[in-house]
Length: 114
Length: 112
Image 1 (cartoon, rainbow over the protein chains, first blue to last red):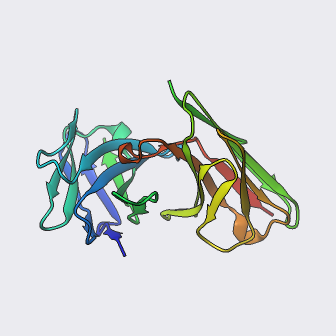
Image 2: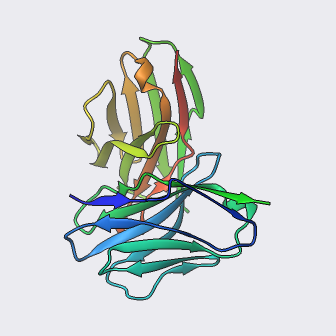
Image 3: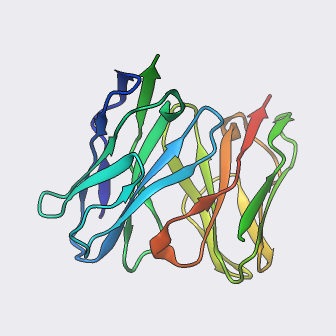
């Protein structure tokens, strides 16, 4: 069975700093998809970034980028020039190629301090 | 463009009362639909998902049920609420699964 592990329950950094959130997963599949979702205090779940496992190039979306290490089954999220609005819970999620269901990590609470 | 509507945003219900939460999707057809529950400070728990009208898969045996009477409508129900049903309920949809899910704004349910 697939599992997703986020080992950092909570992190805090100063505004404008760079922060990296960790995520590891376990699967026997070769084709799959990985996601980072953000859940701010409003609790709306927002897709931040996605990565296809067959793509070697790391995905980037403005200040958000991932470090995808397929062999190590690692999928970390880097937030550059962090902003107060980045304060949120961040969830890592896995989707197998033949599965309808996202497998979720437990989340990391990120606090950006002014 | 595709949008997802979920209501109500907040609900306070007494124990033993019925529940009906509704979710509708616009701008797409034949979406996969999902109901999740999130306890405070916790991750997401998949409750139900549907790949078509009348097709419901349940992930967790419980006091809740789901129905999909129309292609873009997904309803979460209960005949008699329990205190343990309190939580934050999120509806989501996907078509091309690889692109991830799009979530509604959620319903905060408090059973008193």
